[in-house]
Length: 185
Image (cartoon, rainbow, N blue to C red; front, side, top):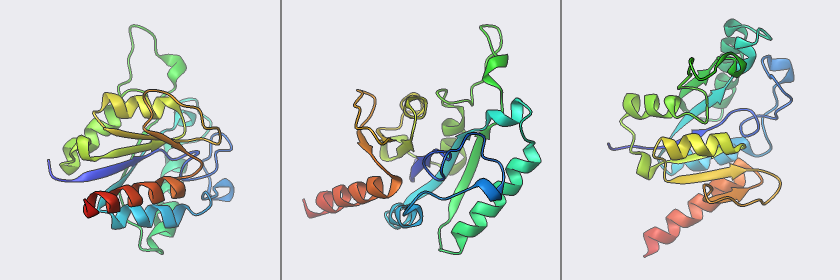
């Protein structure tokens, strides 16, 4: 496995989370997001978005609505030379699962991460996950991702989390500084 990846949650990390965001009209990039993504990209991370989208399974919006929004925000990011290598989503409604039915892709399960690792020849030990919920962090842990960062306005700590930040931009700056420090050693 040769490549490192930044596995990034969408709602709450890439964009403001207003609950079930599925149209461009209510999609807003987080402040300084583009700068943060460029930092990670320039550090050699493959940028992979992994997102739970239970609104599809719940019937709040369609797979087509989700795909249209995805195409639109990826196009917007490309204007800034930001290349998202892949976007994985789980459309399943978690209320329809019990001990007899199981969804491996919905975070905190690692299905989307494992699929990306296999598809892109990624080394999870060199990779990071950035999410705004503990379920994102748990998915990273279960997928073998060594560095797990939580984007959260509070500075709550958990053994699963490598560090907590207020934004992806702050997280990317921290990672950049750490990598520069390692190079100096």
